[in-house]
Length: 186
Image 1 (cartoon, rainbow, N blue to C red):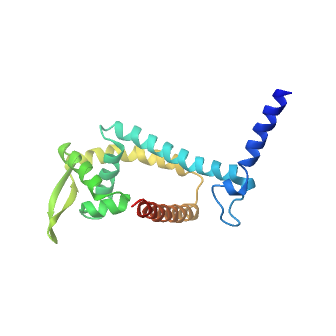
Image 2: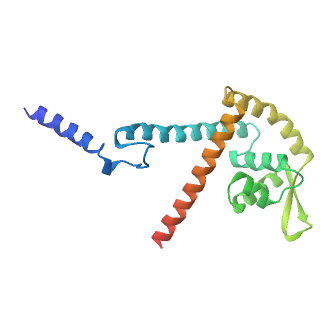
Image 3: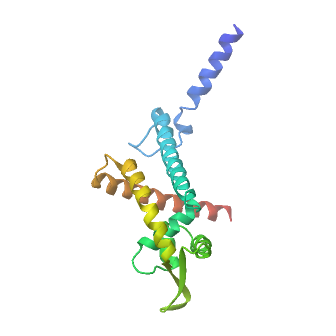
C-alpha cells in the first residue's frame, strides 16, 4: 500500500509540472504546457549544437597552437576586407572589443598578426595578417572547409538564410532580456 502511495505522489508531482503555470514558455501557438518537453528538447538541441561547434573549433585551433577564440579573431582579421580594426572584428564576432584586443595581442606575439596605426583614428589600430599568418591560414583553410562542408551538407542557401535570421533574432531578444535583468537587479 505504501508503495502505491509513493507512486501516486510521484505521478501527481510530474503532472503538476506540466501545469500551465509551470510552463517555461507561454507564447500562444508556439508551445503549450502539453508540449513543454518538446520545448525543453528544442533548447537542449541548441545548447548541444553550440557545444559541438565549440568543441570542433577548439580541436582545429589546438592543431595550430591557438585557442578557439584566437582562431576566430585570426580568421576574422584575415577574411574581413582590408585591415580591419579591433572594433570591426569585435562587431563581426559579436564579442567585446576587450576580448578581441586580448586575443589579437596573443596573435601578434605569436607572429600571426600585426598592428598598424589607424590613419582615421589615432586611438585605434588596424589588424593585418603576417607572412607567417598567411602560412597558417593556408594550412587551416582546407580543414575548415572540410568541417564546414560536413556540418552544412544538405542545407540550402535559403535554409542558412532562415537559420541566420532566427539566430540573430534570438541573440537580440536574449541581449535585450539580459539588459532588463541587470536593470532590475540594480
